[in-house]
Image (cartoon, rainbow, N blue to C red):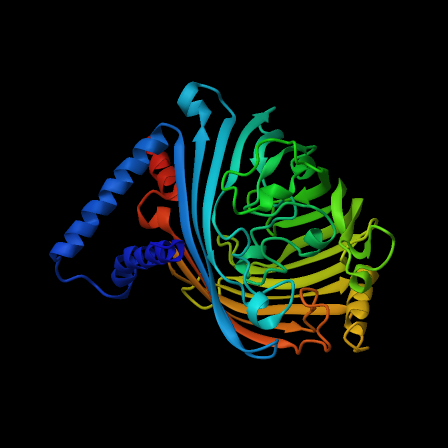
Length: 469
């Protein structure tokens, strides 16, 4: 059985498991048949197992994500692809397990499958599907976390992608476009910042200077083999490492617990002391696009960022419904990056129509400004085939979506996207610029743990109820 068929079975099982919950919301039950009883028994068995694990300090999380998308117009040609992911996570509370209070373990693996639309039909280096990259079973997280001083200092070490600790936000993955979810795109074109699920050795330290202001810094090994899907557990030896990247930020953050209109403001950057391939030059100082020689190995790239999200409306102080504005600015400041600047602005409305408090409506637009190195490489490559068409210096990506919370465990997000001026860095000898593309897609998220009755929120609620009663 192929991996894709296994993923399809998981996806089908997720939908089938969720179907009874949908049916219960849609219509009253007038009787139970054998399949309903069997399903309830399986659900109860999972719930009992999940509660037992939770009582002993282990929380299970699991999900299935599907992202089909197609471009009816624009791009290199028209077509459609599917990208998907099965996720399994375990969090261990060593306080419950062994009396080691404020100490936690985290583990996560994924199985990714499918193809990305941008590679086969659009031609851009950034695509409309964020569930793509390392299309195989891969270890994403294996870390130990320790909190000190009543949680004011948080230290995490182990194997982890840098992007789940830095440049992340719960807002971003309400969208499917990969320039926003999971992180603003420039960081991957101007550094060796590691992205989920590519894990490497490293860690971060977060210190709350006040109840709203924090300082955050980390360091992560850069090892090219960690991105290779042939190594499902990653490369634990550091022999092949080419250096390290150090992200840092100073932030102001509030929540509904201490702010009527929660907000996050951060300024930060990165120091990348590792090797990378020049986007233009060969080792002899010539141009790789002209002489056919491999691109030169360079060392060190730095950059800065500023980003925010601010809730601007909240009609009901007893509800989390409201409109949030968010934005990002990033710039590469040294080295030879492929992207030099990035701008993003978006809106997310939580709670849409009456009775749809969990639904969302989102819009985001971002602009990628390519560096002179990347643009000159395309110009030279085109000249070799007799074309002098200038590449476009900017690419604009946008998405409009509606997040339909079908059940507490199932969300479907139809979306419309546009990629204006797709880059053709993957095919630099293409004579002409690629036509702008219009994309139709949807993102399906199924919380398998919640479907099985072992969702962390459900178990924590039961624990609180047990303490009360």
